[in-house]
Image (cartoon, rainbow, N blue to C red; front, top):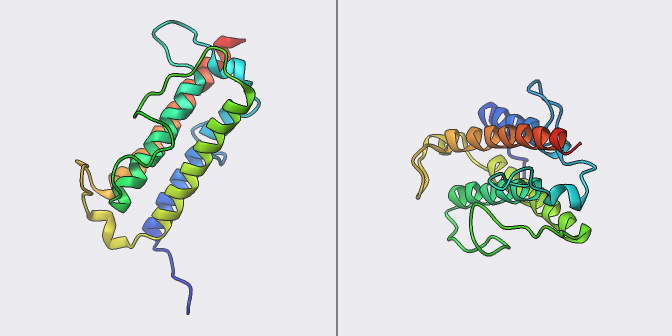
Length: 162
């Protein structure tokens, strides 16, 4: 069976998603590069009471990759490995093993989202998925922008932690 060709539109979206997540982008550090060499202690530290920690931002990003994946596939809620949605509390005494699991969850959600997007037809980009207010096209590039936005926040938090 011949391999399926990815449309140029899908490839552009995948490139945007990858640039914001783990490749060097023109906009600055990617989300994944901002958490490289972050310890569990640093990840759990809050700069101010009202701010989120790096670990909370990582789980938030993982959750929204899952939410995007769910919308693209039509899956029901409840498949995210952690209880809750959007923001997840992280203990102040975060263990290194738990921090590594948070990063792995982020990586896994990105890979699943990417695989799903790669399998989409160009025609599906114009659809508005159930539970969404925007097309799949806007959803996908919004997810890339979400990663870039939170990468900037994490970069700022890391600077303040020094």
